[in-house]
Amino acid sequence: MKSNSIIEPTPTREPEDTDVRQQRVKAWNPILDPVYVILGFLGIGALFIPTGWKLRQISDNVKEYGLQYDGPDEDFDDDGSPCAIGVANEGRKCQISFNITEEMEAPIMVYYEIENFHQNHRIYSVSRDSAQLLGSLKQDRRIAKLCDPLNKLGDVIINPCGLIANTFFNDVFKIDLEYTNGNIEMIEDGIAWQSDLEYKFNQVDGYQEKICGDTCDDEACDCDIVDDDGKGAWSCKEPWFDEKENKCYLFSYPNDENTQYLYETYPDTISPREGVTNEHFVNWMRIASMPKFRKLYGVINTDLRVNDKLTFDVTANWEVQSFKGKKTLVITTASPFGGRNIQFGNSFLGVGSICVIAAAFFALKHLIKPRRLADKKFLKYNREDSNGNRPKME
Image (cartoon, rainbow, N blue to C red; front, side):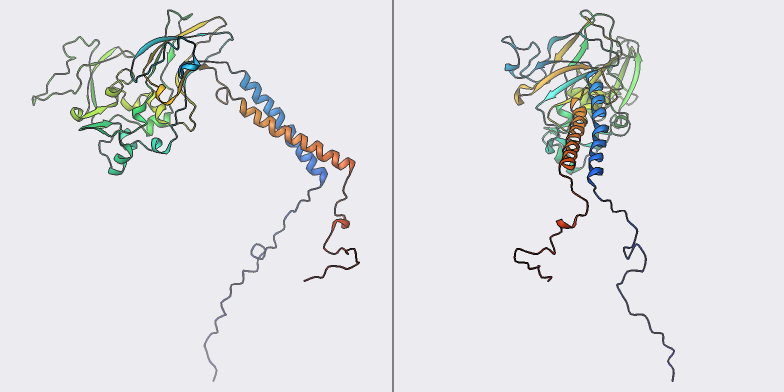
C-alpha cells in the first residue's frame, strides 16, 4: 500500500548556492608593486604639502593680540597686574590696552581665555539641570543630587543649580571710547549658538514682565503695586531699565521669596529680563574639552588700522588665584577655519613630508637593489637544507 506522506527534507546549515554566500564574488586583489607604492607615497605628498602650506598661509594671515591680566605673580613684574584679584566678586576696575601694529579687518572677535580650569572634569560637566535651564520649576531627585552642593543654600533654592552655572565667568569688558581711537562698538548679541538659544535655554515658567514707562521714575514703575486681590503683582525689588530699548520694565519671577535666580547671583552681568538666555551664560554652559580654552565675548565690526589703540575697561570678578589659573583677553580676526591654528597646517606638512621621504627611500632601494616581482628564490617552504634534505609536509 502506497503512503501519501510527504518526506520533508533534512534540515541543513549549508549556505545557499549563491556567489555571495559561497564567497565567489569577483574581487580585485591589488599587488603592491614597488613602483605603485612609490607613486602612491609621492601622490599623497604632492597633495598634502601644498594643502599644508596653504593652511599655514591662511593661519599666518590671522592677526591676533592677547594680554594676560590675572594669574600667578611670577607672570608679572614687581607691581603685579592692576586687574589681579584674590577674592571672588571683588569688582576691581582696571584697563587693558592693545596697540595695533598690523591692520585688522572686521569682524574682530573678542575672547576671554582661561587656563588651568578643567570644565571637562566628569563631576563638573554633569552638574547641571537641563530641564531647569529650559524653564521647568520641577526637579528630579537624581538631578538634584548631581547639582549638589550648589542646589540649595539652606532653604533657598538655587536656580539654575549646579557647578557650571554657579561658576559663571562674570568679568565685564567694555570699550573705553575716551582712550580708543575712533567710535568703536563691541556687539555682544549673536555670540551664542542659535540652536542652544532655541532648544536648551528658556526663561523660567511663570516669568512675567511689563513695560511701565520710558524711565523708571514714572509712577507706574513701582514694584510694590498690588493687584485687585491686594497681593503684590511683581516680585522685583526695583524696576529694570533696558538700555538697548530705553524702556523700564516691571518683572516677576515665580517663588521668588525662596529662590535665588541667576540675575540675583550675578547682578552685574545678567539682566532679569534675560536670565539663563543671556548669551555670555549660554556660551559658558557649553563646556570646554581642554583646561586651556577661549570663549567668545563680543564682536567688533570696525576695521582697526596701524597705530590705533583699543582700550577696554575691565571689572574683574572671576578669581583664578585659588587654582593657579590665568585670564587673558584676546582680540583676533578670523579665517574660514576659525582663529589662528598653526598645528592644523603643520599636520598636513608633516604627513606630506614623511610620505615624500618614504617615496625617496623606496625609490633608491628600487634603483640600487631592485627585486623582481614573484621571484621564486625567495620561497622557503620547499628549499633544501645544507644536507640536501627537503622539509617534510605535515
